[in-house]
Amino acid sequence: MEDINILLETASSYCQKGDFKQGIHLYSQYITQNNQNPMAYYQRGKAYFKIKDYQAAQSDMSKAIKLKPDSAELYAERGLIYYMAKQQETAMKDFNTAVEMEPENPFRYASRAFIKDHLNDLEGAKKDYQKALELDPEDAISHNNLGLVLGKMGNHKKAEKHYEDAEKLDPKNFGMKKSSNEKADVTPQPKPEPAPLPSIKSDQKEKTKPNFGNTVKALLTSSDERKEFWDFVKGKVFGG
Figure 1: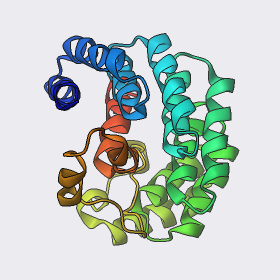
Figure 2: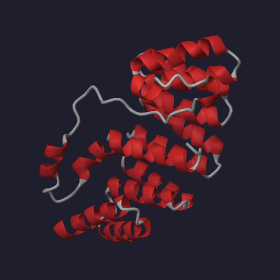
Figure 3: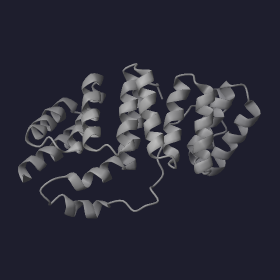
């Protein structure tokens, strides 16, 4: 069992270095020996996503969801893959499911708003950003992005108010006094979870066990994982 766990770690290492094809090859080797680990499908799905094999990525995320059906994060990320594959209606169903599963999580609304904005559903994006800010009034990114949506809708006075709020909350990233035409939307970032999650140190103990099942929750709720996934989308697709 220790040998196949090394396969999983090595696959992840290759993907972190940008060698997604080798990472996929190693994840596949792992899955042939342990096909009940949602983390393996999740990680291989992300690797397929990055080489734009959206069909394979969808398949892997669906397998991960089957093994871990209570993960809103998996639904949201599969929704993003469907969106990239131009299956917009199916994508929104997954984003809606993620919101329904975590109705008190502002990141769910902000993520869906980000996609709605790019689908030109400005009213829907506005409502989702407003809900995100109702749940987390100090989210500078949602203030900035809501300002952009309101600007597109012609409500420049309210837009400026949200730009000002974003600048006050995060002057480093939003304090450059750019004009509205120079502003750009920012990928939503999850805030630290209020409930304690497995720490890196405790994960090390879990990895000594026969399987990686206990690390799945930590992976799927990792801010770094989500930030990296969304930043990739913003940079490669939306041109951010």
